[in-house]
Length: 532
Image 1 (cartoon, rainbow, N blue to C red):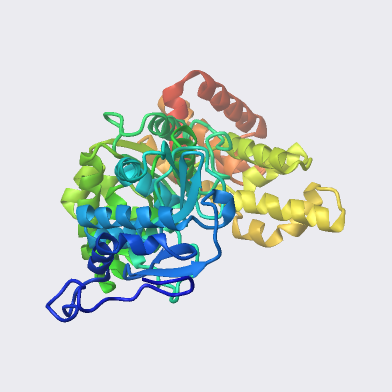
Image 2 (cartoon, rainbow, N blue to C red; image 1 turned 180 degrees about the vertical axis):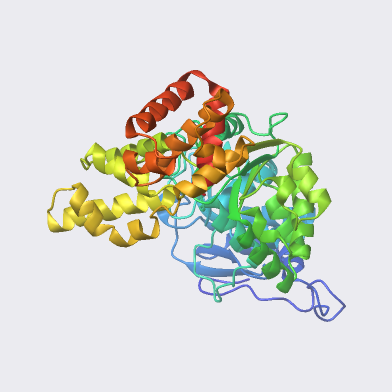
């Protein structure tokens, strides 16, 4: 028997193992099971007891002051702790030592309050995992031990209930003698649970023609994960046009609609690093189980896996397991699945078997809308002509566009200066220089002639046939919008035509864009090719 302040020690003569002492290699969980079953009365004596299951699962019991067993007392009473030891021993017998070590070892017993058992886990991910996998069994075992327990309330360590049912967790009331080093797979799951950026939502995403289809697909997936035809969802497009924003928005929307859902977001590079860490720690099984147990798996920049055969193999099996389990997977890349030539064929075909949605380069109108939305959120008044100037100058990357606006607003606030075109040119001179258009009228003429299957000389000829005049007008329109040349200068490059001819051509093309969708698509394609 032991009194307050003493710790439970092994009884070598009776512990599991060969006669006369513990067998070499007997685990501490085996000893925990044996001790709880053999000496249940020992836990009924002495002062209040705090139980901590350490890195290897050994139960250390230390004495303390008496408590009444309520959650406000600071520690559960000894009878409740004895019950917990028996519950944990039964769990160890049913689930095995590996499951206890990786998922339940950090569960903390807080106390019993009016028929409600309080337990805690140190992270949101662990709490959600235990709730989804073991909450029912834990509740049944506790009610079998103590009929007064009506329900088990699972909380995150150090906080109030998170507003939804939570997994049973047991956290030590006294500090452990040695702090266990976290395993690589566990780190990955904890990190994934908090990787979503709350700023990226569907409400903050500016929708336009280049991204409306991808936006609609992303919303559908967020509202009804794993819907037929939408799993997997593959988003692709150039850098800085909104793929990552949509992926975070999916995760945030799923979390808001289904708080109990397990969501994992990571880049393909992070996936590879976690996989390598699991190999080094010899915890491949844990790594697999963690990612394959989520409800939504989101992987960004998949092109990073090109040339990394072993990581591709692991991602392939993870992909199959998630989809076959009826869970949602969302992937992004800078090119379509068919163009990911460095990936294995079987992976490329699976990536393309769901919904593939592309995001095109932004239009001038969409860039202006993005800047207006950004300025409105910051609460700073920015002249519309400044927004149009930025949208005209920075055309390829929305991140750089928003960065330029942030820099401009910060300069205005720091130096108490109004935002004007002059200050914009002054503050952003380096960015504007880097983004100066290098498109020439000669290049525009060559691209347009090539697109319409004409000769470049037709751009400057006197021919007025419709099949020649219309492409020539398109080239004039693009020259006006993609270069800094004046109308007379543009006319001169098109066979010495008058500036009024150029103006008429620009107005005619703009009119046709509004009424002829096929014509608008052709002009938009030419513009995108020239801008990129």
